[in-house]
Image (cartoon, rainbow, N blue to C red; front, side, top):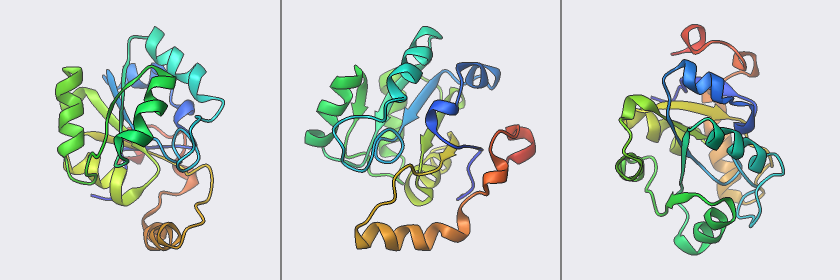
Length: 170
């Protein structure tokens, strides 16, 4: 339940071609440390161009976050994306709501995020393929440092990056 279907260095390394090859039409996307530093108002510089590529290739994207609407709404508006706030990851509530909102079958969706115990476990429990991306900025708060310490034995190796999911899957 803690193993991702695929591993990439960052979200923007995931190409539309990769998604299409695997029959994936919708991306359920985490925010903090996946698209931006934790609680930052602006995404990393690479995000806008990546999202534009996905849109051009007709891949739906929806943000799925445990954050509250005041954090997510302006971030989503900046990127012109729909969102699910208070998603209750790792429970399937937010993922299931995102699937309904986008009209996507779970076999055609992928959850992308940087945390094993929320993004990867949640997507796997919801029956959605998962892609782990490595956190971009180390969190400094004690709860995050503790969570990262606990998940360390479960983290995929960087050697899995770029491997075919068929060869690197569970």
